[in-house]
Amino acid sequence: LARGAMRGLAKVALMRRAAGPAAATAAAATRMVAQEAAEFVPRGITAADTAVFLLGMAPFVWASIEFWRRIATGEPFGTTSDSVVIRDTSGPSTRPERRRVLGRGAVITARLLFAAVAAALALVAAAGYQALTTHAGPPA
Image (cartoon, rainbow, N blue to C red):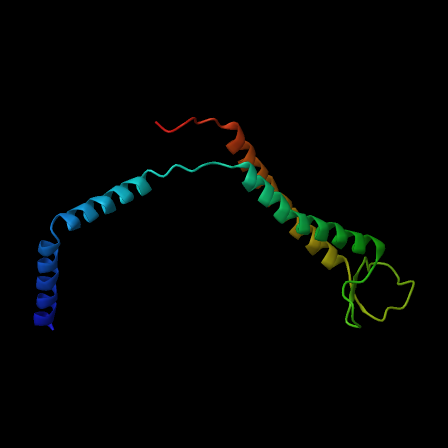
């Protein structure tokens, strides 16, 4: 095994000598690319980035509005006999239900989840504001 490894290393050394200046040029190019990668400067937030973000948010905003509208009006979630209604179940029921009814715990959970989403969006807005108001100028 050791002899095979030594032969492999010897072949690599011979190939490098045979390559001559081309190998040196390739090695220099590799070092230059590595150096440029180490000096990466982010481009910042562009108008295209903002447009893509807003377009990507549109379905989630619509789904959120629809979600809370259905809770407020007592409409079911789902289209089959296995649909679900979310409403306050703390008082007496005024009508018989043929579907599952999720009560106060489901509403509290939904509010907590939406609060977490609101906090994440606030962080995104703060980061966007900071990126747009910070003028670092061109790299020196």
